[in-house]
Image (tube, rainbow over all chains, first blue to last red):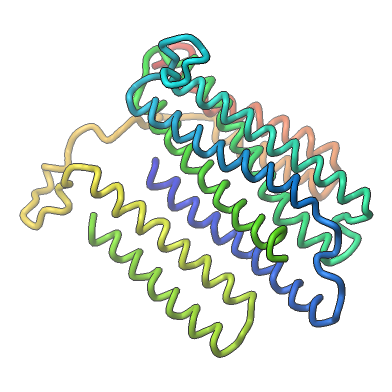
Length: 192
Length: 131
């Protein structure tokens, strides 16, 4: 199952390769024609906060993996003693951090749409919204996966190998989505 | 697992070389990006196989004097049969049809996708075969 996930993720990488390639093609064409680039005022501060939260969510996700590798599903101490947290507490925290990221993206989209940038408005609008939108959909997919694995920890009668492996492959997926976002954020927001 | 990992890392090295040559002769950002991420494609799998290979005990496949029967044993849990993939596939079809016909059908399709996925994921977590 984990090898299958890795193979699938590497094919997902090629999916994002197509999106990156599209971005760079339109960028070189538009810059060649002397059009303004980026085609809108990007809120880098909002983007940076979002990126930081997503990065930290990868850390909390990995803490969940360490917990499940010890065989610890639930916390063994009070809720503020995070060293004793199990898979459930770490994954719930990761879920909310991912949710924060999606909401932050929505806020950024609304701001750009107020500037008149939409999917149809210009070539820049398309190459901005398509890659970031697909990435956002991947994050939402990850959030659903977190809900499923949390549901499984409650439904399973005991900690099975299946629950452990599914929790671990979800973390692979989450790290992948995180790394893709670093690439997207760097190309779109930082180096334009 | 060194051989499998080496094959993938070899592919990554080849793509990296091809990428540099490609950029040098064409200065085309599109193909260069695609090739650079192809390096990632091969490297990701290669790195994973090598990393996991170091953590796992030696497999019978890695032993030149290994015998077939050494590989026997419990491999994992396999569902004997399931109707959920069929319904999940139909729901995906409905959602895809919704993209062409109208957003109302897409929303109904997505609702079906979510509910059939729940059925698929929790099939062996309730009822007679729960584990």
